[in-house]
Image (cartoon, rainbow, N blue to C red):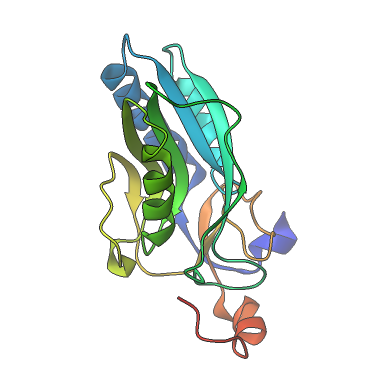
Length: 192
């Protein structure tokens, strides 16, 4: 872990703050969905650590399912704007209360695509729970129902978030040192 931590410029959200906020989000979800049919839809891969902790504090009956979406790819640090479903849900969401569990909302384009796609499947409701929100980067307006933390426009990793599939296992959310990604992205085309 120390090898990965040397690449971090600063810890933005500590392990303790993460766990405290996840418990608060779980309490709100327990209250809001009491007596309702709840399906948590986790967006892979980044959302899986958040989901794992979240389901431990949701004490009402619920099911989970997964979607894998691509909008970054490789060593990109910004969304390409092209959204693809790599893995779809296993079950129907018709007449279900769907809660999308996402790691981070940036431009909003990916989330707008996901919610638009899921609405065509006729759920009873769709709400969004995100660990991190970058409002300064928003290009598409999306309604967020549960937000862990609003964060500045910095490149973050840890607690499920990665750069080139690395750093997901850090127990905190940290800002990656720019030299860790500038060299590999400076020659790539424009980004999102």
